[in-house]
Image (cartoon, rainbow, N blue to C red; front, side):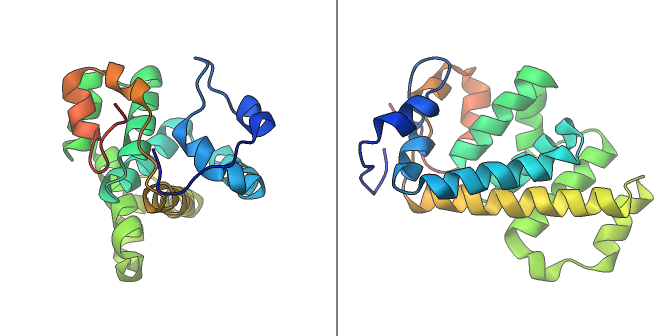
Length: 185
């Protein structure tokens, strides 16, 4: 489940228990540092508040897949399927086959932020602006991708495996989104 042992913090676990009744593995990672999870939740809420939810999910999904974070790829791929796309469309997004030019550019930019932010240039931002994004929109994509780096790296650095509930996803989607650590059996 993880490389570190989570303290038994039943009140904390009860607070973050998933609607299905289980305690997600990522919650166990933060059991020893509840204040960090609370700060993450505040940061993530602030980042999402100024963005269109679909664009947030596209950007964070792209960053997660670039970082080879199965946990975050599966979680945000699931949100994309639940709210915006079919499973086949999300499988295509994971394969870098977005058909919408704005989605394609946002995803490429988010991946670049996640993997090589020091190489971002004015031309990269201008490409997004040429597609209709404002300066604020570009900043929002940067914030979403950068925040995803913190969370994905924390989960992978502690060995947190994606929860077994992701085994219920359609096989082709599950395979496409398992880009790093395997799903918990």
